[in-house]
Length: 183
Image (spheres, one colour):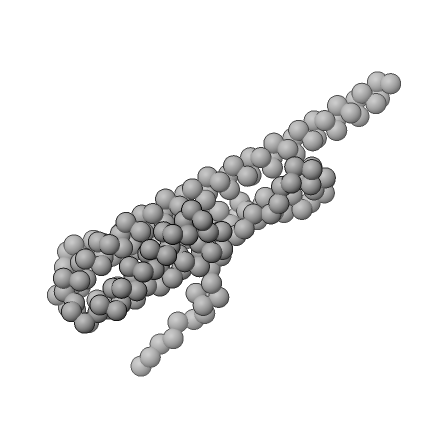
């Protein structure tokens, strides 16, 4: 009789320990996503300032400016309604448009030398670096969580609680490709 009690106690401790590990990973993934969200919002806040700084110097770049503003609006629209994958796609579009805007500056030496623009450009680079680090951390936590709920014996607990895999915040295959260089 006491053997069964010890076995049940050990099983109960194992289930509780596993349950708590999965919950901790879910919360860590939520916190990591929150960090990504903060950086995305910082990027959104920088875009209007970049557009207005460039707008004052450029007269022939209205299409580029419109693309940046449109990409920002789409990214903001998917913030509350889109999946992680959809959000990643829209954020990639915004990053590409912002990088195009910064590349346009090369044709405007006065703007390149403008202190306000240089500060905005530096801030954008900082945000992108921090966002990349946050994305790596989030994806590592999601990987750990997904492996855990797919592994035995955790999968026996994950099923009844309907814990499914989380989505990675992935980059598009276009972003993985080497950039084209024209000479």
